[in-house]
Length: 428
Image (cartoon, rainbow, N blue to C red; front, side, top):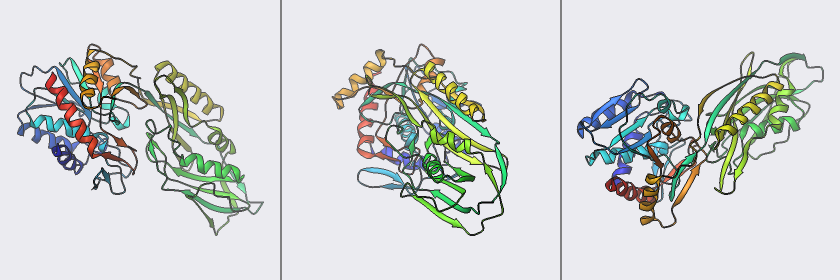
């Protein structure tokens, strides 16, 4: 079982940030050759490993890219008795751990289809555009992040982008002071899985501080990734007196040079963000899961434009479309121009003979295991659409706070899942 962690450490030393494929592809070519698998790579950098003349019934699938909050960074793993963590970065257990199970199975010479997809973290790009042919009847995705759960449904999502050019130059007639206001080191988290955990949103906190101070906004930049709850924001504002910090992580510094003129953003922009309903929009009591949500993820200013990036999710495709339309309509009322991209469908709960078999095997090791849905995008939704006759289920070990510097994976859970995955594979 320790081979999973060994492999994880090995692939974590390889650059696997989204859009950066070369090193991992070279690693996979050598790995496949070593264990006598053919390797197929399509133009979207999806990787399929299988035996020559394969008779596989089961495809094991995971994405190989990871979220890096700092461009080009490679996680430095810290291991204690309970967890694998990273030193001041994301860990990449999402989904390096899933890939590690696959690579371990390849060392055992199984006749399976092993599908490693690209760029999941920036819009499920690899899965959406896959050019590789799959022949298996069943697919086991190992991208879920809670032990004891067999995932049979997930949220769909869409990214919304907004731009506003409502800016003016005013004379500093009221002798206003300039302040730099910043917030950092919030806990952050996944904008789907963690959206109901009352994690503070750095953008909302800064805007609330500006609004309460009746301040003018000159500049603002913050947020890390469109699928993360923002951690860091910095703004330049003008007001009569020093604003009150509404959170312990907010730092406010006066800027010595007041200036005779200010280039300010329209107050409507502040009003929109201040009143924007961020977080959980609806909850499914029957499934005990978030049904719909939206996260204000990034904000930035340039010379002529202020930009917002938002991520909406829902377990229902019609509701997802309604959230998109409502959000765009609201933005346009405040003179934003909008666009959207990265849309992927919901995987509406689907219990079938394969998912039942997976749960039956799981219960041999954990009698409390149950079917669940996930408020995050899984590639399962894409594959269910592309391969409608394929039966799909998703499982995974306990991964906490993915997409954040607090990300960690439980070692005991890795080992527990190892037994379950091998049992599923052998049963087929």
